[in-house]
Figure: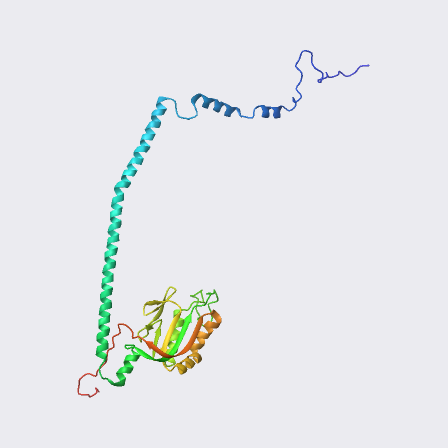
Length: 304
């Protein structure tokens, strides 16, 4: 019977040959384990071992180039340091000169301000002396209305302050403005309405934080500050008004401006309180010049 040729048994050892390794089928894994370091890295490490670990050139030409670079860097650093030393005194002198100029101009401005204050006091004294002449009740009333003389009497005390916590509310309501976001702050327009309301209710003299108001006074805003005659005021704002205390307080509460202040209290948390005072003393307005008009000399006949 003819049979197929049989393959030789590969598992049987060949006579005279080395025995087969058990991991012969895992040649790739064996190679990775035996050659964990790449051949290129091994060659580089060998070269470093030959030339040293400093990586500096060993040839004379390479060393000369390195030395030239170091010398050039040293020259650049030296020149920069020298330039800084030369320019430093010049900048210091300019800075000192500017500081001296500022001090000189500040001292000059202070002297001018002292001169202005002295002249203002002199004008006020001369004015007060000139007003002390018999002129009847008309001149006295004019001085009071013009805030040229101190006044004393009964009246009201109105204190207006910002809300304890200024809130971000809508900008409608009585203010009718979108230019202010923080509605818990007292604004210049609020103080204008308060002061005008007191005048309309019969106040004879008014001060805001000790600043006497006249017919030429202005209440404005500069940023977040309120100015009265260009002088900044800080809250709380204390308004003193001379007049019949009980009548003035009642009239202001019932007026449109008093109701406006009440709306600010209810809607925006602004704090306000008014009280009747038996005795108040308001100082005169500084640097106020009162001029009196006199009829021109003539025959008294009107023109036709």
